[in-house]
Length: 286
Ligand code: ADP
Ligand code: MG
Image (cartoon, rainbow, N blue to C red; front, side):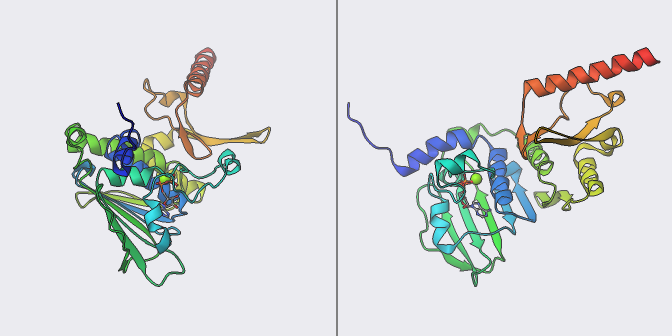
């Protein structure tokens, strides 16, 4: 048996197996990149549950013309440069794997413009070939990434995509939890040209509660209290539903550590216990 090096395309497609499970994973990666770019406004356009088109446009810092190709190369990132950076990373990404993975299993167009460039530049990649020469484009400052025909070149994976409705549900779940982690960024989302979500940037507490109402329903925010707590250099803030509004399912629980979503059994359990205690207390008082 001989040992051979794998081609770049195959390496990326293998990595895509981990990074890109379905359309919603593409949305997650693209939104995180837009947040990392300091976007104030993001618009998402989806067609056919993401199998036809996923387009994310932001007004963030943009990518230099000379860096466009690197953005699609594996292990290339602007977010860390040393082990030391890794230990205090505060961006959502840093592995430099998302864009090369996505571009290896779709037809991808990347258009971007930085503040000090005269125009935007666009490159395309379709898994087999990269159009190496950036072309000028009238795009304003920021970045648009368009992902068409996801998994078109990996038929076995394309076949495993679920119905449009199911894939859209996954996408809405991802968008919801990311929108709750980044209040300062405005967000719109369309599906097959129909507006599904429109969230203004939310700075004040009132605006934040309006956003929560749009995402979790006005019933939740009408039955929740704001908590803020600080101890030993740690801050805890959020909204907690009143015991009278408790649900049997933990489907409306969202936890974030430094704006990153976490799922943690210990935390969920602590919340459940405190709810039980409060209702016990209440029944004693009544
Ligand atoms: P990572 O986010 O881990 O660095 P990605 O593959 O997601 O890796 O992106 C590669 C690089 O492309 C990023 O480090 C960043 O420099 C650039 N990039 C990607 N998306 C955007 C965006 N929306 N705005 C500005 N730069 C971006
Ligand atoms: Mg990223």
